[in-house]
Length: 317
Image (cartoon, rainbow, N blue to C red; front, side, top):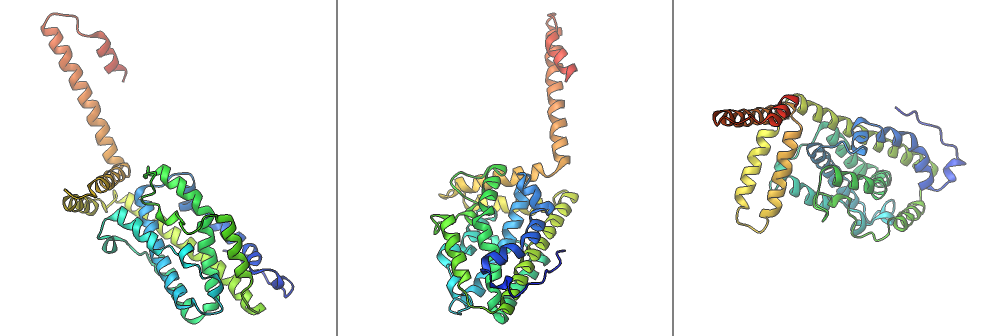
């Protein structure tokens, strides 16, 4: 874990955005190097994993944006209040409905680490609103930067539609130029009035925000590992949900999307179970051999030469 560095009065005279960047550099790297994020960056992410992280993000942004709304007129936050450009809750709701179906609120899990993050956001918003900017900076500017890279990785790895379904979280319709908007946001953040003690507290809170993110990633990694050890125990529930959703949309205009969601669920369930893959492979080999032997038998019965090429192919495979 990162050790806090003392902040001199001279350093506290710097712009808040620069101080935040410098103070969170080490813990930022820690977050990027968690096993979960390293695998994600390599494109090694399953649909199950992506759904879990989307669910956790929903709880985090719901809490963050509830507290932002509570403090939108407070001078300690008002200058960086950009709901139309930045807020993510509505986008995450679209993504979760796409992945889980209309009953998504009853389906999504909230791990203990995510709940801990949520509780900290509510504590800050209600008792220490001057620290809220640290969490907004950590989340929103990260989404506008590295989040766009993760969007492309997820779309390719999960074969999501090019039209953007399932990726609304990464899409900022209210921001036409991310670089210019980040410059505007930083300038507004730098204009916030705060003394040296408050600046120091904001820097510490930003580091705490990154550590909370790390804990969320670690918890999600444990959930994924546990489900893989248990043969992906969520499968029966997912299959039931798929059948119910397909039945409801059987003749509706959204049948195409539901069929696509069902295919992704089935693909995710198959690819996460090595036993299923082996059974399918052995079944295919057995079927191939049976067909070949039947053809040889039929050929021998007719007194003709028994397909030497086919027999050789079966033996060499």
